[in-house]
Length: 100
Image (cartoon, rainbow, N blue to C red; front, side):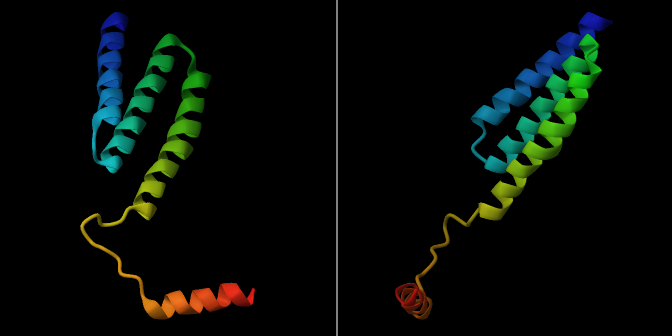
């Protein structure tokens, strides 16, 4: 039973890690990275290291992976959409910088 669970969790973790490394969509890659971290935490639980597994869940999945997802969501732009420089904003920012 224990070795079967290890094999299932290991395959699950390796598949998620490969997906995180090869996916082109950053959001999907970040979510599969979080899934790979869950698999690693499950391996620690299986080995009897509950503290390390919980620390991995709370620190890496709860903070780092969520921070990566929020960063991707907040900084993503539409690739096909070109932003035009607005002359009024450019002149006002140039005058403000020169005044400072």
